[in-house]
Image 1 (cartoon, rainbow, N blue to C red):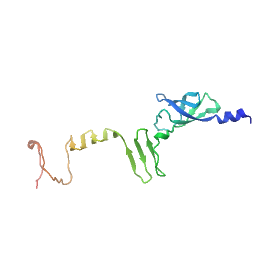
Image 2 (image 1 turned 180 degrees about the vertical axis):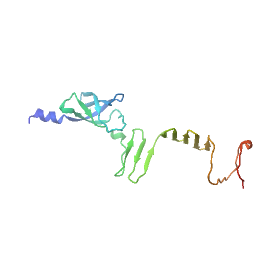
Image 3 (image 1 turned 180 degrees about the horizontal axis):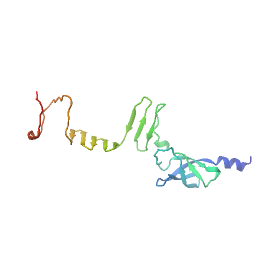
Image 4 (image 1 turned 30 degrees about the vertical axis):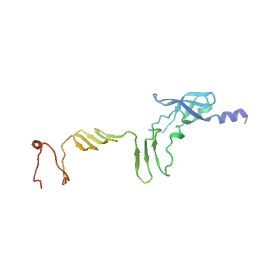
Length: 183
């Protein structure tokens, strides 16, 4: 095998530094620097189905030359050492971003969600929104908010068990309805 053949085979896989990302098309593409002065544009990223990731500039990728053709490059998903959420126990998996937000599934069955602003879950017309101000549950029937000032209901409340109150009950008397006795 000649030296040029050895070099050609070694050059089929190289490390690259992400310079820019285009996430607008059917495939995400990168502009990558693979060697000093060598810039590759339109490098398609082959990521696992369903995974969403837009790497920041400076992330590293493995660049493969398909069939040894330097004009036909693809990239494997990016790695970014400074944004990596390290220190996990064996068996842990999850997602993290450069801002410290993360969803971590632990081998003990627990799930840790950390967000700087909010966690939102939606199922059909029902929404669960958790912020630093509190928790809001929204359904087609109304909204319930749990916050620092207490609990607010925007719909009638039905109790199927006893209600114990350790304080005064305030309200408008003409709207109060009591079935049974208070005592």
